[in-house]
Amino acid sequence: MSPIIRECQRRGIDYSILHTGQHYSYNMDRVFFEQLQLPDADFNLDVGSGSHAMQTARMMIGIEEVLEREAPDVVLVEGDTNTVLAGALTAYKMGVKVGHVEAGLRSYDRRMPEEINRVLADHCSDYMFAPTENSRNILLGEGIDATKIFVTGNTIVDAVHQNLGLSERRDVLGEHGLEEKGYFLTTVHRQENVDDEGRFSSILRGLELLSEEYDLPCVYPAHPRAVKMMKRFSLTPNLRLIDPVDYLSFLQLEKNAKLILTDSGGIQEEACILRVPCVTLRDNTERPETIEVGSNVVSGTKPQAILEKSRMMLEREPNWGNPFGDGNAAHKIIQIIYNDFTLEREHLADW
Image (tube, rainbow, N blue to C red; front, side, top):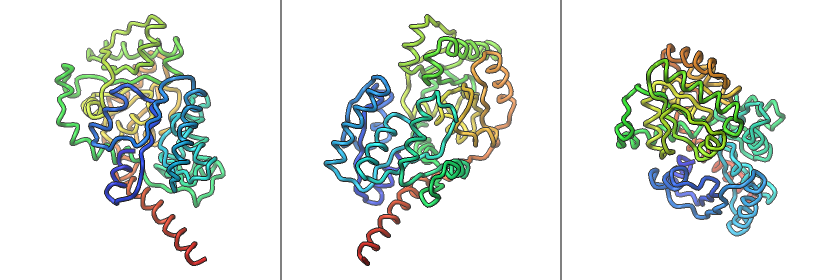
């Protein structure tokens, strides 16, 4: 969302940042505001962890109080988290217009909480900002009014372009004793992977096989949830486990990796933008565009399949195009909303 915040600042548009506190560790929360030079959140609900129902309910209660007090014209949410669902649903029920940034993504895997979140957010939104034509077609196929759908590209492209230069001031490779293109980078954090002992242990074994075959370290900034489940399942993988790193450091780790292996949706896109080959450690992806252009492949979670798909991607030339836009998504999104409210005001004045 940082490019949208910057676009509002540039244009002098009145806005507020509401932070639910769904992520609450320093490297997954506060550091973003500091490094990206963003203003502090105007509202912080500090909901913390909890079951999906408990976390979402706490968010909705807090969001309702803020919306009642602030009376905004539109609420923007991005992605597929519990925060997105809570924000979209609360605003919709209060009669506030909702804009879903990154709309129309589908994995068609209902085991993923994120899939339910993104579907429900789309179907209660007034503006759906689809990253690609493929996302637009998905929304149309679900019966959504075409006048509510806008293909803008994804703000993740804006964010990478805006912040890559800033990230190069950091010597994250030196801090971790790494060399350019001399390591693999992995992230595994999704519930369906890390909460399942069989799937998690299978993924970790696949990463070990890859590291052994190429004699390169596999660097794994481990999410707190993943660390907790490793301890619960008594898993001690022979990987380079490090603490979660901040966004700018992670951009550098991505840019300089030989290969990225992940179960994250956003990282699939960042790998594509940065032209680093990617293997998705899942059975499906809501970013099929990455498969189509050749920057990514889905491996599943079996060790040998992970190794084979990694070999395939390492042999591929990183000469694909970026299907997620030109880096001006935030400008387009704000302009669409501005135009809509201008027309609405003119219509009311005429009436």
